[in-house]
Amino acid sequence: MENYLSIFIITAILSLALTFFFKWLAFKIGAVDQPNERKVHKHPIARLGGVAIFISFFSVILSTTPLNKHILGIFIGGIILLVFGIADDIWGINPFIKLSGQALATLVIIASGIGIDFITNPFGGLIQLDMLKIPVNILGTTYHIVFWADLFTFFWILILINAINFLDGLDGLASGVSGISAIILFILSLSPDVSQPITALLAIALAGAVLGFLPLNFHPAKIFMGDSGSMFLGFLLAILAIFSGGKIATALLILGLPILDVAWAIIRRVSAGHSPFKPDKHHLHHELLKRGLSQQKVVLFMYSVTIICGLLALSAKAFNKLIALILLFAFTVFLISFLYFINREHSH
Image 1 (cartoon, helix red, strand yellow):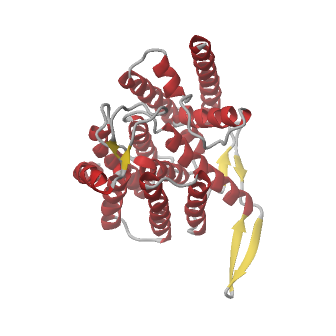
Image 2: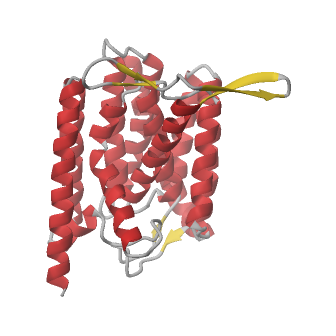
Image 3: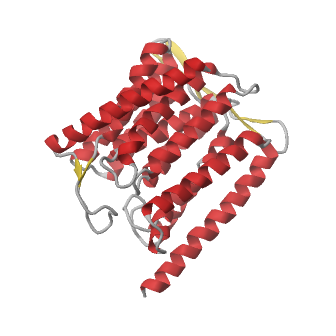
């Protein structure tokens, strides 16, 4: 445990130092988030905080963990997201180009052998996803596409990338929720039924990288992580859930609120005839702000929900997790619907 604590502290200190550097650099190169009608902040704020998270995380991981195809796949996929994210943070890119970058990074992960071969059936047993294997011959070598497992993995990672990306709307929100989630997944990785020390190392390094960045990101924020950071965090959390024995239900419970908020945003935008990627100010955190809560109170509320759901995820069995997910779903749908319609009526 002392080794994990050392990893956490080293990564956090490195992340904090790099965050100060990239805050300075962002203003030098114009990677600045300007306020507008859909932004909460009132003054220009540096982006590129995600680069500090990325560098601090991989500096520690690559120096402490043996390089294998999984680590290499995560590194290459992370670089792809970083490049697309930085391009969006500095110049702004088409949402579908950004989505193609997310898809490419996800395909790299699948090609590196990371996937969800089964999910736990809450009513007992396992649901196997690796039954259909399609052989593919590449340069004389036969590879197998594990169709359902790869398809499930592809959408799982894309959903988590965009859940954290959409969540990044208030100071410290996405970074704090991601840090809490990483700590929960760290504890899960060390539990007797999972017992994966390498996964625990990845999780605690991620927690250190994020929480080292948080002091400058919490309200009033001095720097934002930008898409380069939020996409990377969602990407890593999705992979950690896969590594932790395919604990998809656990990750769903921990991150249920942002995932359901993404689903609501897509339904809301498409039903209004807009692109699902068109930004707006109707996310759950925006609706809470409209009811008069401060940024700090909204963010602390979201932290609290994440912690409660995380503790439930650690202690509950599969069937109880299903019940908790259903209750979280009902609570989130009610809260989002109530706030949305109350605030709409009030605005009229």
